Structure formats: structure tokens, C-alpha cells
Length: 451
Image (cartoon, rainbow, N blue to C red; front, side, top):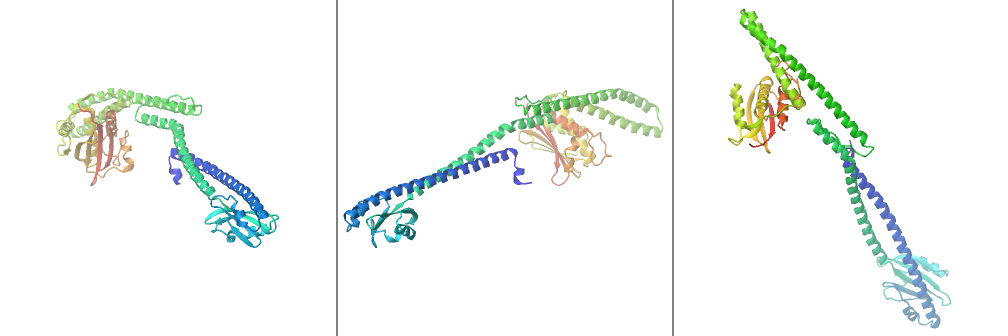
């Protein structure tokens, strides 16, 4: 993919407007410069010719009155500043300045003058451009040549050129600014759609796009809102179905518990007892599955409520380890002793226990629990002894019924999904990364709210 293709759409629009402004302003500047240049030079040449003819008439009159005083005839001329007047009488040249003479008159101009015609030619004099105008002096057997400098024209054109360059730079900057502003307005609905999609992805299914008057954007807004309506209806149907099925399963589960209790009292032979033990394990797993499904269903339906209370995270984790007989797991804490925060103790406790159960099932057991505060968030890290979680599975494992590579491991496939829901209700996140030195590290982060 090209560099332009990797640019953001807004930057490409800015670049397009800027390039368009640069091209248009450059063309206008070049045309304006050339028109100004030709106009100034033309005016200067016309003025130089007019001045030279007037001076030639004056010199001719002086020579006709006194042919022996060419210098006196030249003295009556009015040349421009830095200019030079020359007159040739016979084969002798006379000049208005000792610094200039016959050598400054181009041969082509002299040939034209010798043929009896006036001529005009651009020459270079003292490093600057000058206009040489030659006029034959009829009746005086002489020619008059005047060199008029046009350095002020070059300086004027230099000023004009700098001004036009500044105008091109200003127009390009204005094009970029207009491109940024206009692309921002054009892309605003796209940003609003993306923001709404992010909110919907976070579970805010009541989010909708506001109506717009633009006839080109109205179909997009209506289609987006209809899509979200359909998505919400489908999720509601699935949630109601799961909830209804789960509730209906509780009755046969209670019957199975009662029957299993009676059987445990009446069966004495070893084979029967072994079968009842297996059945009891599966019934307990079935009960855990139903309870987890009910919990997730309430969370996804938006009816789950947090029972917030003051909780010391360190005390909570230590009590959980004692209650689940995991006292061998090391607790590392940089949390301020005795500090409490607002948490739903049951939900966060279940989240931590589920992560520990996952470590037992897939990671060889937990080795360390770290409790700390990072950027105003409670951070609980659980490190295990396992091989770690492949990167492509790190989001998948928090889905319902997701199982790791060890599909024979115990569990319902709902433990980590329930962790994600409990943490999400607190406005937090749960992620998994690699532990330095090997193993997986599950990280729960929850915004801190002191009590």
C-alpha cells in the first residue's frame, strides 16, 4: 500500500485541498508575474524610445546650429539616472560620460543605424540590463545612441516575485485549513457513527444516531438505527430464551438433587456408590452452569445491579484464599493498608475465584496475586505456572462456553465470561498477557472509588 493509501482520510482531503490551492495559486502567480514583467518591460522600452527620440531631436538641432560642438549638443540632453548618451559625427564618437563609449554600442544596432533606420536592442551594461535606442540624425550626418538602464524594473519584478511567492504560500496554507475544516464537517457523521458503535459495543444498546437534514446522510442514519434496533431485539430474544430455559431447568435439577439424596441413603454396594458419586459431580456441575447462566443473563439483559460497599481488596483476596484452601498462593501488595474502596464484594470475589479456578484448570495453579493501584485504578494480577495463553485466544477466552486447548479440563466454559461481566459492571476491564518468566497473567482493573 502506498504512503497516500496509509494516510487517514482527513489528511488525504487536507492534502488534496492544499495541492489544489498550490497548483491554482502557482498558475495564477506565474501568469501574474509574466503579465507584470511584460507590461513593465514594454512600458520601460516605450518610455526609453520616447526619451531617446526627444534627446536625438535636441542633439540634431544642436549639431545643425553648430556642427563643431557635438559635446555641447549632448550636454543639452536629459538622460535617465545611470543612462548614457552617445553621438557619432562622421567617424568620431562623443559621450555624456567618460565611463562609456563606442564599445558599449552593439554592432547589430550600428548596422541598422548605418542603413538609415532607428533601432532598439537590449544589452548588458555593468552587470545590468539596459535598452539601447539608436536614431539616425537626418541632415547632420550623425547618429544618436542612448543606453537606458532597466535595473529598477528588475528590482520591481523581484519585489513582485517575493509577494507572489508569499501569496502562493498563504493560499496553500489556506487550502490546507479549508480542507481540514471541510473534511472535518464531512466526516463528522462518520465519527459520530463510530462513537455510537463503540458505545453499543460496550453494551449501551439504547444508543441511537440523531436525525439529520442532509438527504445524502439520512439513509445512513436510518439504516444504522434500524440495524441497532434489530440487534437489540435479537439480543433480547436470546436473553429471554436463555433465561426462560435456565429457569425451567431449575425444577428438574431440584428433583434430581432430591432423588440423588434418597439414593445416597439407600445404596450401599461399591459400584452403586461410585455411580452416585459421578452423578453427584455432574449434578453439581449442572447446578453451577445454571447459576452462571442466570448471572450472565441478568448482566446482559441490563437488570443486574451492583451492591456496592466498602471493601479492602487485600483482606478480600486473603479471605478468598483461606475459604478456597489456597493459602500457599503468595500475595504481593503495594496497596495502602486499611484503605477501602466501593466494590460489590460478591461479584469481585467471584471474579477472582473464577480466575483462580481457570489457573487450576489450565495453568498449573496460581502462583502469585498482586494488588496495586495504577493510574487511579485498582489492579489485581493473577500469575500462574502454565504455558501462557496464545495471543489469538486472548479475547476469545472471555466469551461464553470458550474452552482452552485442554478441552478435557473441568469447568463449564462460563467462568471467564462471568469474570468479564462482573468487571464490566464495575466499569473495569480484564485482560490476559504473558507473565515475565513464563506463564499467563490475568489483570483485573477497576476504577477506584474511595469510601
